[in-house]
Image 1 (cartoon, rainbow, N blue to C red):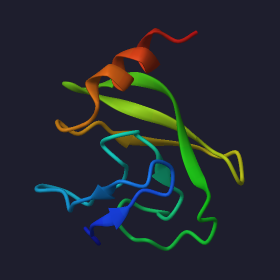
Image 2: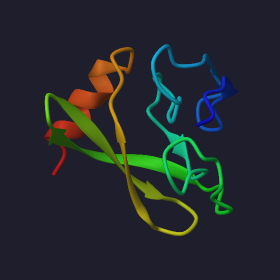
Image 3: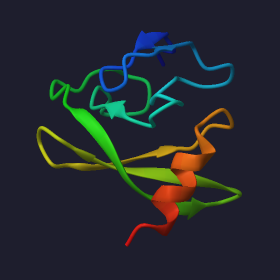
Image 4: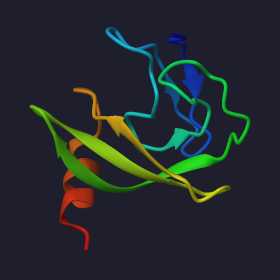
Length: 95
């Protein structure tokens, strides 16, 4: 599993490594990049931006639902505690 810092291709902010798992999305704008086949492997060749489109309950937390802007595949990532809660809430009330 690869855990690395990166510059978000959507908002341009510098994103630090996660303290507890492989970082898979920007905590500021919630966008991700279609880089993994399995969590943290960085083996996906698509490399499209994953746009956050919704939220779903998962165990004692939530998953962010994404749609790839390049290949249209749906993808899910577990929310992290430092994620922008205002955006999480806005995604949860969208219809």
